[in-house]
Length: 493
Image (cartoon, rainbow, N blue to C red):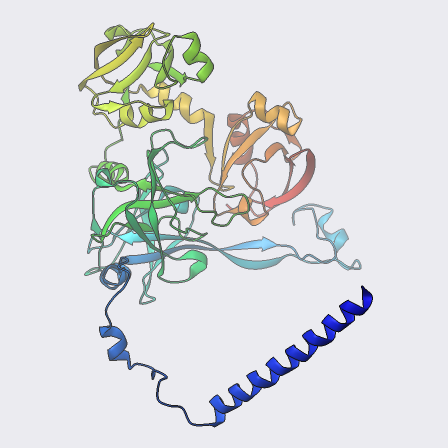
């Protein structure tokens, strides 16, 4: 057996050598010898451009050429006091009697001033300098700078900002500016091509493309009144606030956020429909407060178990858990236990479908609401009301924006308390450009104390932050997963 293997190995080796020699001769003849003219020469640029197209994919070039100059970069330049990574820093403010003890000690690192920049995108919607962007891009900014593609920079002011629609309208002092063309997001269909232009990582006019993945998408922990456009258009930090175009060159949405585990693009992008954003813009123009439609019900999902218990063929609709007294729903006869399956001409497949439709309905309008009661369908005529002011305040208390820190915080629920192993504090729901982002805080963390004072609610935390001194190192205790640590944060004035 061994002898046979050796013979076979010697034969294979001989064959390999022969093939290698033959190949070498062929290559040598090709390189140094004469060809017979069968190799096609490289075509000229004109010939390549005139070649017949084999695969017809969309050509985004006209959109980029026509509207690329209407895309802007939005930054916030500010100077912050930071500390070096080597040695230690002085934990006391300059007016403290202990401040001077640290000077002259070995490895002492004095504080230094460093310029930091927040970054986002936007697009011009009027020749005289009105710019549309996502609300979270400019929320908490102190010195907003808008830079055009020709590198001309302008100071911008906020005309209006809607937290509920996450939409902001800016104004710069300029004229004869290039503008985008607005479309109608209601005409979008799943599978259609989309194009995004923005400033990811500050890189001017970066173009990415994809398709509509889903429509009217509701997201957890975000404003329930935004029917997001889901796509697979690559969106990265700095793209937020930029436009998303359809193939007619019309803006149909504002790039708002992505689903990610590591901060980078993972194939799921979400955009605010332009119809939703422009509802806020028109209110800003008229100096009016946005009014949202209101039914006066608390709703929940219909799970498969609930569907079986309620004798439903499938788990669809929005289950009415409570009807508020004297509300539009109560006056129309809607009762707890009934399931809303249609609103106007729109089917309600899930609980997240209903709030955007109700919120977008003009108060005072009457609308048909289809419900199931013990499996039997019937229709109610409901006159939609205006969300009461105290209701809006109650909702806002669930999520508070702390602009000095660049944070959105909320109440810790039982699920978060159990996951983090704590019984007090507030939950970080979102982080915007600002001091919190600068020191590395992120959504999902809990804040347990600030300036050595225990934190118990979003309202109490907001009051504590409001009374803290500016440009002074402040200790903050945070918790991530099952680890607690102290961090130092410096608040602006």
